[in-house]
Length: 374
Image 1 (cartoon, rainbow, N blue to C red):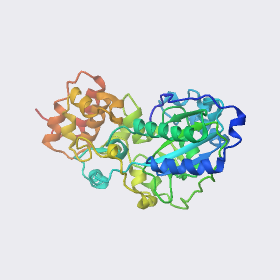
Image 2 (image 1 turned 180 degrees about the horizontal axis):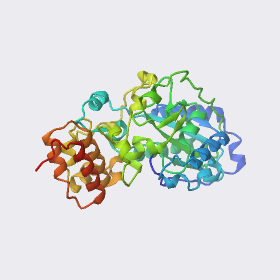
Image 3 (image 1 turned 90 degrees about the horizontal axis):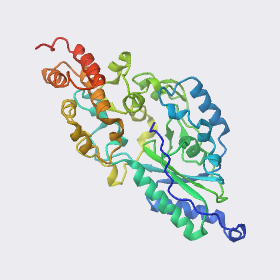
Image 4 (image 1 turned 90 degrees about the vertical axis):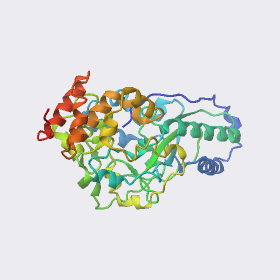
C-alpha cells in the first residue's frame, strides 16, 4: 500500500523501424529472462498492456470507498490500468519479482505470540527495497539496449500509478490470491515486484492460473476481517493501512485487534499454505537491521525522534513519521499484558506535544486501569 511517487529512470528514443527487422524477439525474450535471473530476480515475465477487467474492479473498489484516506488512489485512477497512457508508446511490460523473506530474522509467529514484543512486517525489517530494485531494473534495461539498440523504456518499483499485481499475473509470475496478494505456486508470496515498460514487440507469456481452490485461510485469520470476501479487501480495516497509510486517529473499535503489530501485518501470508514453498532471500539489504525483528515494545516507545530517524534511515518505516510511530506503539502497549513497566513507558508520553500521541496513550492507559496509578 505504499504511496506512489513517479520516478523516471530512463527513456531512450526508439530506433527507426528498419533497425528492428533483424531482431529475433523470441530469442531476446529468453535472454531478458536469463539476464534478469543473473541480476537477482527470481522470475521475469512479459505481458501486453490490456487490463480492462482489472480496471473495472479498481473503479468498483474506489466507488465503495474501500481505499479509505488513500486519496492518491483516486488520482489518475484509470492511468493505473492503462500502461500505454502512463508511458506513450508502451506495448509490453517486463514484470519481475524478487524474494525478500529474511532468513536470519526471528520467528514471525513467535513475535506475534509475545505481546510484549514489537511485530513489524517482514518486508520492512531491512533496507527500503525501492532503490535496489530500481538499480537492477536499470541494469536489465542496459543489457537489453546492448543487444537490441536504443529503445523506449521506463522502470518502476511501486513508483507510479500501476496495477503491479495485475500485470505480474498476466506476465505469468503467479496469481492474485483471495487476500489480494500475488502468489506463486513454487515460491509463495514473500516477494517484491517491479516493472520495465517498453516499446519492444516481445512475445508475451501465459497468464498465471489461480490455485487457491476452496482454501480461505487468509480470510479466516485476518485480525480485523479486512478481507470482506474472496479477492475483496477493505483497506479501512486492514492493519497495514491503519499503521502505515492512515495519518490520523485509528478507530477505537479496531485498536484491540491490532495486537502488537506496529508496522504492517503479515497474517494472511503467514497462514497461506503456498508459502511453504517460499525461499529465503539472499539479498543482504533485506536482512533485519537494528534488531527490529526481536525488540520490546517499551524499548521502541522510548526512542527519541532522533533515535527514530537514525534507526530508520534507508528504511521503509521512516515514511510513517515519528508521530505515527508513537501512535502505533501506544496501541500495542495498550494491548500488552498489564505490567508496571508497560504503564511506566506509557506515562512517560502522557504529556507528549502531539495530541494524536496523547489520545492513543490515554486509550492505552485506560486498558491498564488497574496499574495506572500515581
